[in-house]
Image (cartoon, rainbow, N blue to C red):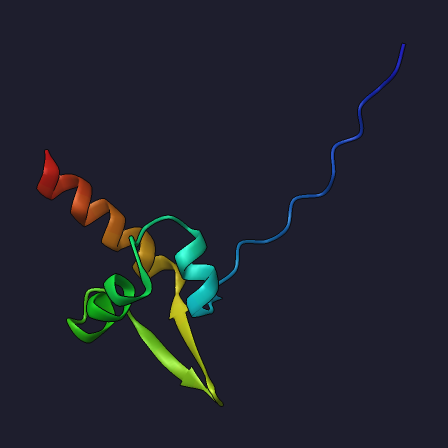
Length: 70
């Protein structure tokens, strides 16, 4: 009998790059994401040349959209 070893789970990331935020599936396009940022629906900051997006703000954005759709 073989035993499957579970791989250790990685800690959840606090901040995502624009590309990573797009990969979450929460946004239809880069323009959609940047509009959400401009409107203050998602929180971000600049880290050097990169924009970092708060993962919790993406979760809150999705939850808000689900409530609005209900």
